[in-house]
Image 1 (cartoon, rainbow, N blue to C red):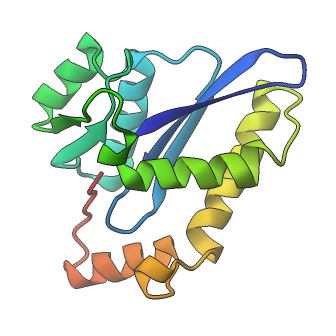
Image 2 (image 1 turned 180 degrees about the vertical axis):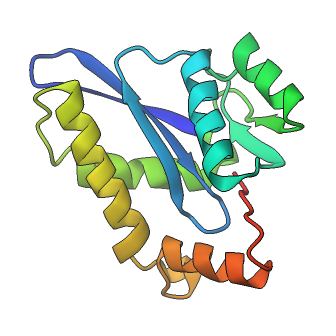
Length: 164
């Protein structure tokens, strides 16, 4: 889980919260806003909890203010989730999200001109769907993240698992 910053055509800043499952490489959520706080992170995690009917056992995060917030700390405690903080200045502690964010920046953020927050949300969601559904990964044996997620669900007797 991490943040990526960009801007709209008029210079206003936007940020995207990216949440990637380290096992399947699925981008399970992206949330775009202009000023995202710990409460926004919790809201996204709560919506994932409702959809997937589960929470991860561990979430890798950096030491950003949104991730060291009281709101996220309380949510993780209440849901039995361990927050695994990376060492300051060591992005290599979470290589999957860093790789994903690099692809996201190269293929989506740098390729589009966002006219509004709504326009950014739509274009980013379209890219996320394409990334999950149509892009095979060599590290996944040539499967797409969604195919790995479906296979994993089948192998675990349809019990949802989320490994962030």
